[in-house]
Length: 98
Picture 1 (cartoon, rainbow, N blue to C red):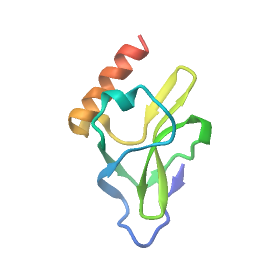
Picture 2: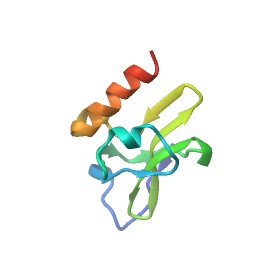
Picture 3: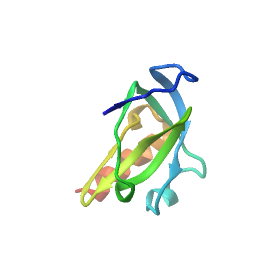
Picture 4: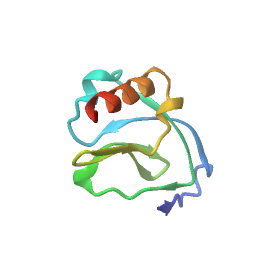
């Protein structure tokens, strides 16, 4: 984990950020056109480019939002607190990884 080191933004980050796509994902057809997700964190995980599905930008930091490696997928944000799009992500996880 890497500590967010940007004096221009409050730490910890608590709030909504837009999810931006790094690679094609079936989630793009499921979520709203510009999904916002809810973060509460002071650190972020460094993801390999090929594993990074989506990210959010917080200040100068590109924060991994969704990562996937083979059949393991996870989020840095809190899908359970991310409104309708978050619920869609949780449903996708339940269906995709039965």
